[in-house]
Each structure stands twice: as structure tokens, then as C-alpha cells.
Image (cartoon, rainbow, N blue to C red):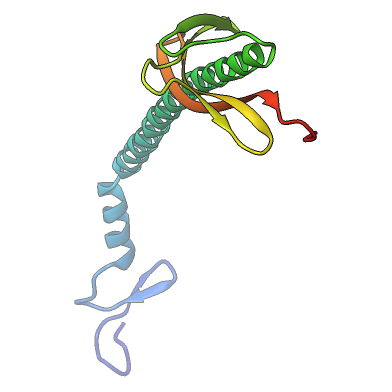
Length: 170
């Protein structure tokens, strides 16, 4: 049976009409789908690779941050040990213990070792003013934190101790 307008024969295919020279759109779609059966696997593997790389970088960054925080912990232990050494020296001098330039001693603070040194040159001098006479000490306190790796911090401090009060000055 011929079409009235074009004169081409009408062919019924399902619910659609196909003219000669036209390609079957459903056939093309189904052949494309048939050729792409493995693409889902490839996309899934690529996504898995990307997620694995993101996970590995997160683990690497976490290890790096853990090392940084461990180093900070060792530094803080050494710093507070050195600071404790300064306080130890201040307490001894305030209690009346006399030190001369060129001396040193070692003290353990919180399980960590601290070396307190009074240098030979300019380690101790005397200063006087309206309040009275002061013994002035320049000390170096080196704190060491032995675990997990050795950390060292040195603090240099000037400590004045009032030895003689001027009369009438309270």
C-alpha cells in the first residue's frame, strides 16, 4: 500500500511507520548498548582507583601530622624542664644558697634532666640602687626530654636577688 502524499510504500513496524531510506533508530540504540556492555566495569574501576588514591593521601597526611605533634610534645617537655630549672635556681638562691660564676649543677624535673650553668664570665655581679644591694645571676638552663627522641631547649635568664635592704626602705 502506497502513501498518498509521498508515493512510498508504508511499512508498519510496531507502532511506528518507517519509510525507505530511513534507518531504524531502535536498532541503532540497541547496537550501541550492546557494544558498551563493559563500560560500567571500567567506570567502577576508575572510581575505585580515585577513591583508593584519596584514602592513601589521607593516611599519609595523618602520619605526617602525627610526627609533627610528637615533635611538638618532645619540644614542650624540654622547654618546661628548662623552665623548671630556672625556677629551681630561683628557689635555691632565694633560700640563701650562694653560687659563684662558673658553677653548674644538674636536677631532675618530671623524669627529665636539666643542667643549670652559671657562666664564668658575667655569670654573677652585684648591683646597688635605692632599694638595696642585689646579687645578679645570668644562668643557662638546658632542659632535655629523652623520649621518644632527644629534645633540647636552652633558656638564658637573668635573676636578681635582693641581699641587703637599705634602711627605711620596706
